[in-house]
Length: 256
Image 1: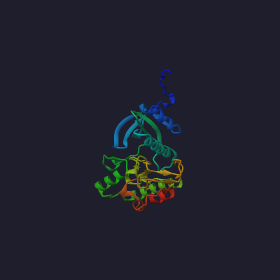
Image 2: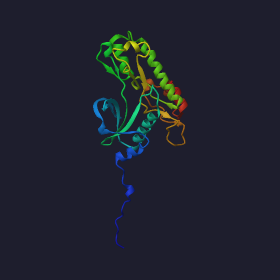
Image 3: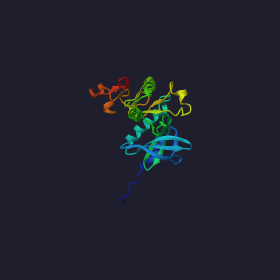
Image 4: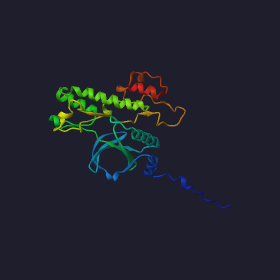
């Protein structure tokens, strides 16, 4: 019998990264990368890049990830899906997902900014960490004391909303709280300064866990990998934890 070279079925061919990514994002709004103008890089690391960009007249933040493996891609889609499902004035607004080319993908969210120009300084910050550093180093918080209460109230409202919807953030820290004063200017600051001097919103849900968006397994309502997040900001019980999976209810208590 003559030897016959076997042929591989068409299904064996791996889908292109963009096709695979867009298929997983079928329930999410999608933007085209070419519609964005990249203005500058805000932060970078092993996870990817965070960039400030512009679409038409609107500034947005692009969280861009390098597609290294399918597991990372699934976790990214899960974070985007979770953000898309959360609608609250103290949760950063999700815009859309975007395929950036060269095996990179990301999602867009609103741009938050606290501008110190009304106070005589040409400085702009986005995170609570940057805000605290600038106010403390420039004026030792003199005149800004009441902002701490406003920020704490906004964080509490955002966290309460997450917990009411069975979502545990798991990585609360000043870096992941975004702040803005874009609702007022130097001309109308007197109208807002005493009542609403700042708006704070929770961001970065990469470590978050939810009963709504969970992987199907025997541990459907429990989460392993407890020692995630930033050690200095983690609850004491997480440092002493025995390593067993925790429920979302237990994780919510560590947020508090």
